[in-house]
Length: 285
Image (cartoon, rainbow, N blue to C red; front, side, top):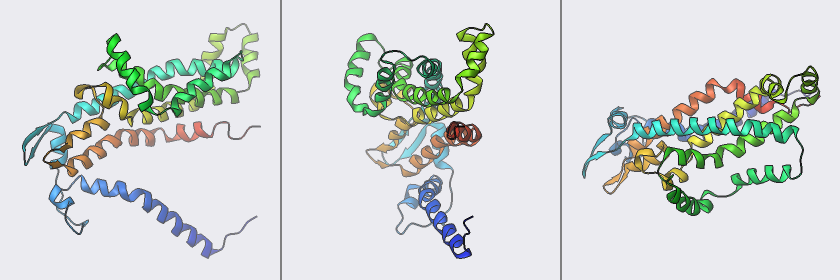
């Protein structure tokens, strides 16, 4: 048994504290900026002592901001709703298509199965700019440009490969004998998949869905090019605060806080499923 000296414990605690502070300080500073005016934010030297204001958040909610160049109008709350709708819809479609496909790749070995699975995974390797131009032309021709359906379709390039490859590993870790015994009792493939495979792989499916939601929520480039302002998510909507009269740092900080809150709350709520799902199959008996 390895014993750790008190000095080593102290040094480890200091190292962990420094790492946490290093990664959490930018988030903490953005949170403070969301309660400051531009004048306070740009003050030199900066200070954590200031008079807080809720004007940044009220501007986001009302969609109106007074600037030096006049009244600036935007639809941040609509952008926030767009992010929620696009992410939830994309993950729902991704789970509907990806989970059965993952089960098929895990249980049905056929010629070219690995090549097909790797091809789907390669969509995650390709940079979005590589497919944006042909997608834009293609969507304009078939009428899917600037539509929710088109964006949800494009988001499958993000969520579907992720769900497919994560869930496939969980299905492969489930002993096939359990499903064979259920099928010998006279049940079909569909019943076996629904009543045996899905419940056993539930934590993995939840983890994959959560990660896919976060990736879809954070997407920027697809919505920037393929959608107009009324259908763009919050990641693109924050660009409205970069104006000719200056950059509205306070509103950008408040927008960041509001945009990361849903994914943060979701991750905290589903952390049990996330940890259990990501650790599933790590130790095989």
